[in-house]
Amino acid sequence: MKAARPYVSFVSYFRNDGYTRDFDLRVKRATSFLVRQLQRAEIDSEIILVEWNPPTDRPLIIESLDPLPQGDCVQVRGVVVGREHHEKFIGSQESGMNPAAAANVGLRRAEGRFVSPKASDTYLSKEIIATIARQDLHENALYRCDRCDVTLSPTLLRNLGDDALLGRLESLDSTRYSHIPNPPQWYIRELHTNACGDFLLMSRTMWQTVRGFPLDNTVLSLDCDSLIMHAAVALGSHEIRLPAACRVFKGRHDRLFSNRISHVWTPLQSRVDKIMTNFRWWRLQQIARSAFDYPKRKVAGVESVLAPSIERNFVKPAEQWAHGIRPQLNQPENWGLADQPLEERLLCRARWSVRDASAAA
Image (tube, rainbow, N blue to C red; front, side, top):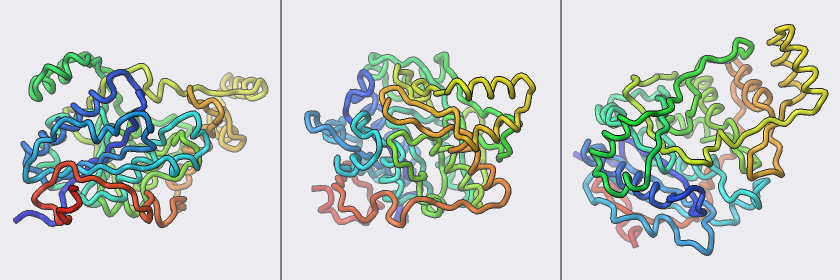
């Protein structure tokens, strides 16, 4: 008997603004690839595609997707979030995307027993799919794996079948984002936060408990994925790192977010920090950076926004949570725009769905 709701939901988010070359091709191929993976594994599942602040002079990506393979276990929904919901964020005139806010729209609406955000142009290894297909995930676990960045040409995306493409992804030279141990001056839990926004699988109950990614009044959403991991563990979850064969593959491009972040120092901050480095006063250095919020961070392309230091924004609350202070969630009750009548489209219907068939119109 089919379940009344899916076992797993994946939430992707994007904006058709030419963020990278061949962006629409990347999204189309990755989406149809995931649908077929889930169908072959016979996993009752859903994919939610959040189209955030779409440009008026370009078509919606969800309208230009290749025909999605129909089946009895995978459902694909599109959600369109208008400009008015983006303009309230600082920096909205410079960047049309807010990753955390967009993800929260899908996370709030996800119906799966387990839910993970997923970058729209990434691919999951067959070992991840096999792990989910066993349907023995733990309700209180937070599942993580490594991301592998590869050089992936449009020709490969267009010409290779699914099996051949996955084989190529596994064989290509890659940059692997594995767990990085915390600096000893960070008194926080040892979690695998490196590139964690690309695969962060938790129960729907836990996502609702933490209210999605934390609220950021800017478009940058810095540290949101790392913060959510530490908040979830502080609220009763525990991390499970999947085996090395479980990987997320991502095609390299010249606008990777982490490569666009730089640090902003004043001359005094630089001098003081150098003194503490020379004397190896690591803990004092951490305390000073957190207390006085330096060095600030800037993201290329959003020059008007200076973000807090990682020590103030991430390490400080993570330390508090690691030492027994309960997280104070800053998302409102209606997080993910739950009370807003957003446009939804049913792009691929599954038999397990209990939705009214008119939603497909």
